[in-house]
Image (tube, rainbow, N blue to C red; front, side, top):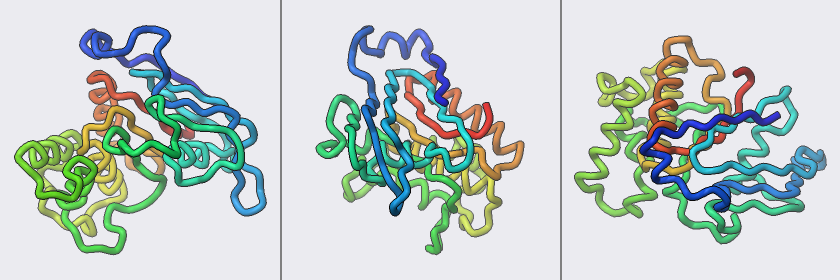
Length: 218
């Protein structure tokens, strides 16, 4: 099941395309299998500028597979996907898309500080060049948005599960994406972190970010 709401402020509305313009995400007739098991069976989905669209359903119903197919992690056996009016197979402007994966850690086995992990989210903007003042400012803002400024120099290994999730969201926000895709961002997260994450998302949506996310509950 998909549920959606408009999150545009007056400023975001001024920047939004006129009615009738192409959706930011379009999925048509999507079919996909994991191993030999069909998971997606003819899925259609459209996400328009400024919308917050949540995919809800039982475990194993294909929610995560659907969002992973949107970013090309799960290939389709049939159907088509477009991002920003470009077929997925030709889409290259990944700085416009932020992705927060399901149930992972910010450390990934590599010793790193909170700031270093979040800074990796700017690579799509710097194109592996040296970060400039704007890049550093974007990283600090993303860390501040998720309430981890006081932990910026700490190793991610020292963080709680909820704080790990906040780091991953800050990493996705560091590039200033127009589309934010999140796979169960609240799963296993303590209440305090849930409140911070919800406030962060509200701010992003108010600024015009489009959001597609997987949830177990509203």
